[in-house]
Length: 376
Ligand code: NAP
Image (spheres, rainbow, N blue to C red):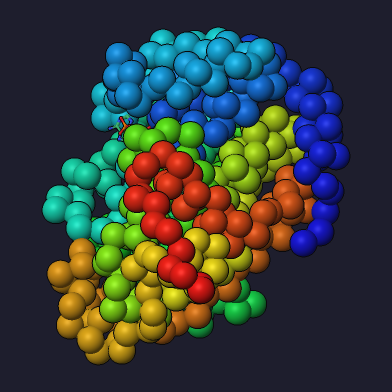
């Protein structure tokens, strides 16, 4: 890891923000109640920003009370209004007067999709189109920060073999996902491509995209519905009691992803795509980290399952056999150097994101605390 420290990077961003005045007026965050966006809203409020958050239902206190609490504890101001990704014009009112727009809203559902077009593809693509159409109609907008994903960088782990440097980086685009194979990844890649097309067709606002790996780390709300939460809960649910597939993930802490958004939004020189991955862990390694931190009272995975067995059972676990063939047993490698150099990011280790996230699940009663067995 290199580049500036978090503190010096923040001071630099402050100066740059003053230069451009990006945060001098209200700042829009779409999907403000999401797992990731909640941390971004909190950080913006702590910096004294006026945050306009859009959510589907501002009256749903279960999903918004943590945001109002964050606003009560910080110098910034928060207003929440209703907007739907699929409703044209839905974001116009909230965006009016904003220089800076963070577009984070998009469903993160990667397993057991019954209707991929309706559940992830249309909200990702049409939602991005609607938000950027609103930016084109809103004369005050100077920058849009889009929450993309590593899913827009690569489709399957086996795609690593085709990279120049043996690592995924910002030059890579996912060309292997389709509506039928990896529809969430297809949706994220198509949405980011669309965003670059729209941005290049005008010159009032610039686009910065962030491409996080699997985001883990503590959620600010016990009602966070992101797949990130269910992936970690599975480690205690018994799903992995017999073992896990040889599957790796590029992982990044949710607090660092929020910080990268802040820097991408406020830093005057921020531009282009930014891969955000702190490290790569396999499911078995995540299990080992959890066992070391929380003891063996949980159903953490004891071993790697044979891949033919995993392929056979794939449909029962919400993934396809093609997914298994193209991902299980393949290593992953990422280069997040650009985010370190240009945004000054210093990522928390992936293992810390895992441990802090599981601790939050225990603290919020989402996983039942089990005592360490004697002698362990
Ligand atoms: P999340 O907690 O499920 O947040 C998704 C947000 O999108 C929620 O606010 C949700 O609102 C909103 N949304 C969904 N459908 C909508 C619609 N039709 N209209 C308006 N809003 C809608 O998931 P997350 O993990 O924080 O993901 C946030 C962003 O990060 C997404 O763009 C995702 O693709 C990206 N990302 C996530 C990860 C990860 O590992 N979590 C990794 C890379 C990229 P409701 O609460 O009303 O459903």
